[in-house]
Image (cartoon, rainbow over all chains, first blue to last red):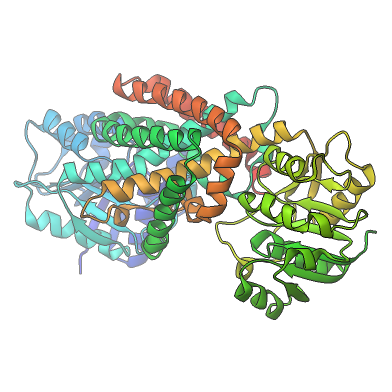
Length: 291
Length: 291
């Protein structure tokens, strides 16, 4: 059983906050130090019992920590790493929760000159459209997957410790390469978010004087739920994972062009084939999606 | 208070079945006669208490009915109308629940030569991704909207009767032109369904040997829920409302092209602006969407 005497969470939002709550409930952490730029969010985190105390200076926050979790938007990873670099104890394990992994590895290399053996890139595939510590809850990672993307030089013991951390909060841990991770997540998460944001934006501008949304039903509400996600976080993800996202977008736009032609040519048979395939596939994976 | 001694529901699926259940609960119908092509579905409808009896021949089913509700997929409207035309009593009110209205009006004109004054085209903007009478429930229309698209020659008393029917099951009734309906629904319902079906189909073929869906999280499940909808019904809707759908698709594909360029050029500022706008609009309309 893992025990972390002192954990530092930099970025106490939905993910960092939920992890802190879940680890505390699991009884495997001593003290949890929060860190971030928004002091009122940090005060709220203390009030909610998510962290024991907070520091606004990352270099002070990491001092004496046994493990550090970076829960900041991808665009803030490099500045935060730069700030904490010289304050790090060589024994401290660092992990992150970023939704893209190649870019985090590049940030680490840029800041440290190489990848420290104690840095374990990670991504809990969980979340809601809400953000901030108020939205945090201890069950967020239950039955979800956390993907670790260790490198050849990553210390196996550090990987085990980070895996144990996620398993303690109910996640199933799997490992893969950063590039594979980035391609899979571009397809199943980053592309859908971009499509949903894009649709709501298109309709808002298209409706003109009329509130087009008043005609929307439950399907639209669910389809666009992810368009209520944090714009800054998703801006960062789209930029950070642009190569894989552009590849997914290219596939999708090509297929959408084909679908458009099927509608234009009234090819009901081919349309039905696509719809049937989509329904069959989704229904087949529903148990996985509803884990 | 409206009272319908004998109601005939042709197509006892999610919508037709739910309407029957809700009307029965409201206590405003005498006998409900179901009709359809799938006899086991009709037997189940009787077992579930959705209809009192059934007929597989539409011409027999409509005999003596005070009101007829067409709950069949859009592609079946014209054949059903052809079958019942000569069996109709001139006093019988007819309405339908089709998700596109211009095409229904064309079907009526094609079959009757003109639009009978007693025909009130309608569309309850409600549904789930499930289909068939097993999925029917009496609360489906509570706080939802039903849009009626009467024509100049439509009998105002018939419109009032159909409006009263929907109000009795908890819906808010509004009227507009068929063309306006078709444009609004293409944008907020038909386009999202096509996009969701398309995404799941793309990913299923893209994943290759690997089950790409195993990396999907809750956002993907919600985004693609509508891809579990009935393929035949949605094939018919896409074909029937192709003009408005193609217009919406054109807008969306153009905007998606712009978004793709923003990612390619790393224009985070512009991306964030789109995402912020989408989130603000969606959050503002959430009370409407969650009615």
